[in-house]
Image 1 (cartoon, rainbow, N blue to C red):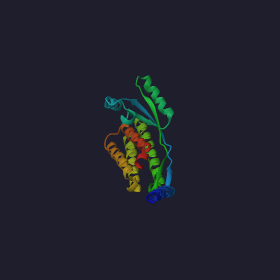
Image 2: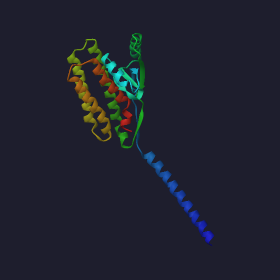
Image 3: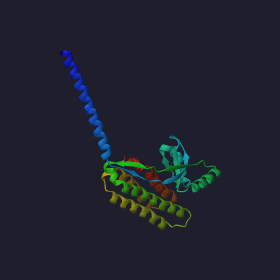
Image 4: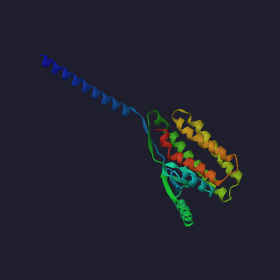
Amino acid sequence: MRVRLKRAGATFLAALLLFVIVVGIFLAIFQCKGRKTATVSLGQKYYFLVRDCDTLTAGVVAGDSYLAGGAGYLLEEEDAVVLACYYKKTDATFVEGTMSANGVEVRVLEKEAKDFFLDGKKAEEKDLVEANARTLDEISRILYDAANGLERSSVTQEGARAAVTGAVKSLGGLLTQNGEGHFALWNVALRRAMRRGREIAAGILFSKDIRYLQIELCLDVLSIKQYFA
């Protein structure tokens, strides 16, 4: 009799465990199906002109690059210093060839913004996230033109200053539109860029400083996914 009871008890526990597992799987499937998802489609592609370095030489390479007229932006994850950023590969490779011919070892680093997913409440912000990425891309191109114009003397100090202050104003507009919530971390990146823009606009403008801000915005576009993960 006891053996039968034990067997019956074991059977009941096994059935109960199976029931719990099935219910758990059903709830998980239901939650996944009911959870909103959205794909953020980007596509921006940038060509960075870089000089390779290591931990010990990074500061020296960045300083030398800046003194030579490059942006001197340290890109730690690539162990490289960025001199400039281009939107056409032909432009980047042309400058690479010219500098290499003059004995400066540089290379072109191609990076593209990848699509990514938003889920839950964040999925509702898809259009605004994409708008932020497009706006930063557009601002970076304006700064690129301003830096080139200043370097070639086709843009005056005041013209370049207007471009930088306009960039700061546009970033501020994004902050207002974004609000906080899901954009809290991303807004930190925008505020950082705004501070740098104000610092640049406050003094004598140099093309390398404008390029530095341009590069920062391009890298923000490329890394936007991490702010909404």
